[in-house]
Length: 255
Image (tube, rainbow, N blue to C red; front, side, top):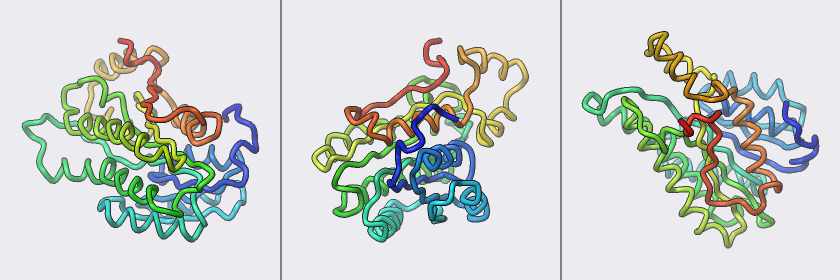
């Protein structure tokens, strides 16, 4: 558990995507722990309901959706937000992994990568720009990115391209939405121990895994490490922060 005040986000409402597991689930727990109400989204409604059952009772909501089509995502988010009389923030943690040489990467695989991360982010941004979706008093959008968008790595061409796209989206959105008092940032995470991370490790040998962890000066991260960063960016503690890609990687990019 972080050291944030228990009432840091009291009375606020946040949408968290990718909350079925991993970083999204950890963020939902952390956001709820500091007083907020959360609307959790993901593909697995059973997991989402299980997550809500673990949260402090604040009338949290489950809104499962496969985030693929930006137009549908925009309409869905707008409808949710208007029913809530506006959101205080969105944490977009949904995404998928892909390790594959560029010569073997097919259009369908690239399309799935784009849909779950970049297209969904664009749909959420479109909704956020619409009147009444975000609170007029100020709001925050936080998108999950990756150090893969900042550093080259064999077999990560599609994943790196998508995450670099997220960071580019953030910079222009921050300019476009500033007049609406909406801050926009991304978190470039290193290797974090999640189900996705474990699937990636299965394609690596023992020596490669040891080398990969060694390149993280502080070792692999935990979901809570990213959740704490997300809470900071969603809260008023970061009221003067926008248009940034915050590297939270245990020192990986220093090597």
